[in-house]
Length: 170
Image (cartoon, rainbow, N blue to C red; front, side):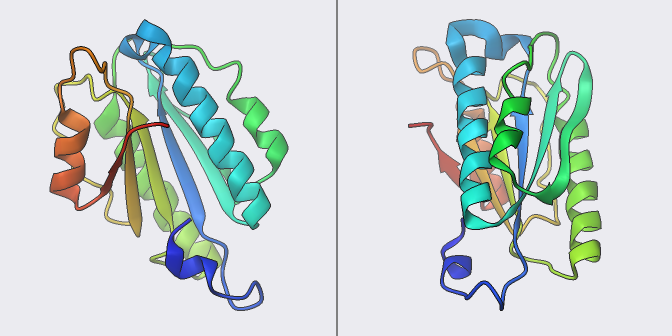
């Protein structure tokens, strides 16, 4: 959660939306990266539920872009939606980011809030696309699940270009 939101009282704040974009492409299946990313996504959902925030979950891979959790109040039980997610196929990252931008704009209109929402992009960066950042995200965190033995560095490059936060999963 961005630090500027933690210090506001519950009555003052509009809960931020944490939109999680989970890469389920074939390359994420190697080395257990998809399982690792799914665990990371489940923890994000649980943390958002404890904080009283909103959450949404998009998956993108060989099946295209799929909305598994529509934007709304986070519930710890929502993390169970991540467990059965499979992987395979290509990486429609640009399509996912376009859908993320659309969902963020719609959620901001409905809640009457802008700027505090966060896009969490969980990916290994294994795509040739050169996507642009969604404009509606107040904060972007690129969580880098790239192969540590043969890293491509695309996640760090996107984060730099987008003025986003770059994290390695811990």
